[in-house]
Image (tube, rainbow, N blue to C red):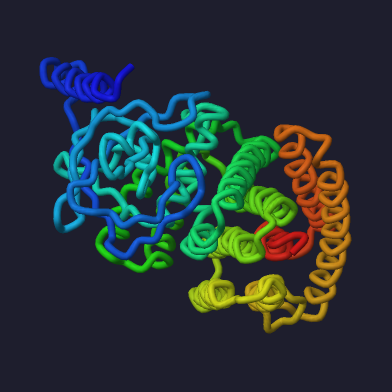
Amino acid sequence: MSQCLKQWARRHRVALLASMCSFALAACGGDVLVEGRVPADGASSAASGIVPSSRAVPEGSLVVAEVLVEGRAGPGDVIAETTLRADGTYSLSVPRDSRRLIITVYADEAALEAGAALRAGVLDATVGAVGGVRTMHPLDVESTLEASVFAELGRQHGADTVDTVDLRARIDPAMASAWASMEAEAATEATVTLAEAVLLAQRTRLESFAEAGVSVTQEALFEASLEAAAALDLALDAGTTAETAWAGFHASQREQVTEETQADDQAVSGSEQAASVAFRLHVEAELDTQALRFAAYRRAAILEARAANLTLEALLTAGGAGQTVIDAVVTQGDLLVTALLSASQRAEVPAAFSTWALSISGGSSLSVLGTYLELDTTGSASLEGLIAVQNTARGTLELALETAWLTAGLLNVEVLAGKTADAFAAYRATVIAHLDATGAFGDRGPTAVGILLTTSGALTLG
């Protein structure tokens, strides 16, 4: 087919879809206007596929909404298109109830046909539109890496198998910066590795929920996160700092996921612990570039820290803790995240977790847990006994994880995810069984165990 015919067919496919929705609004549900911007200083990558160029994004560039097609290399099916305005903004009309779109910027039609994108980003869904407008997060190098990873997963496994909200949470500016500086072949290989790590983390999360007796699907977790994702995008577009915006997202998403799954806070936090281990171990084993490997490792640790901090606050609130104790755990959690964000070497990450865990659940009466339990001599001895059991269980957990990952090359994703979740489930069961046998701490015993499991299980195999 000639280039002219290709352009004619593409434009008429877009026009046909738009006219069909205009003609039958009841059937299509009307359109949603997606509005966003392309920052002028955004870098790009040399990776092949979705981002083969580091060229600037000029006014008049083609902006399209694409639907990925499983098994197809190159661009997806275009369902809407427009051009970039002089101020770097754009507006696209897409069908209401759209899910998992890639918003991509191309220099022109020829670049679109060649798949030579300048920027891209994942629009999780049109859910959260305000007044018929869904605000998109800025299309920069971070969003482009997210879109590249999603494109790899979508083409290999189908777009609807991917929780794009979770995917975006596992990528941050530091990772994107390291990726953008890589040579073409290395950047492309890194994209594949990150896609594998995200897939493994998401499968492990589901397995962990199942081990906790929570029946939930990938799609249900995705749908439960969409309102929080829309609020996140709005904040990012407004210029809110990334970490502030993401902190608000995690708090909101936790509420929605807990409501959807009816899972307790320990199950939700435990699912992220297991997913974090899976993600970290895969990227550390498979990523060759040190800067990206460390950035991905640290990002996973930050996600786990945020999940743990939300769990601890919820556990203490439900357990009747005083506000002073709750404030203390929030303060220590903030210090942990700050330490992780400023970490420049790998060893600083587990060190930060160790300091945090000691302040929360150390055997001293001065720890948050010690204050909550109002420890006397007998209580201190009971806590030391519980901590000893927990330490033994953690050693068993680490050995089980090491064994699983030593044979990782012989296992498929589902088996590896299952073994990771199984190891965490056995760890939790051991500690809980000890408390049940001793009956220590009365009504506050379950909260004490939840705190220990959350802090001491964090950053396993750090």
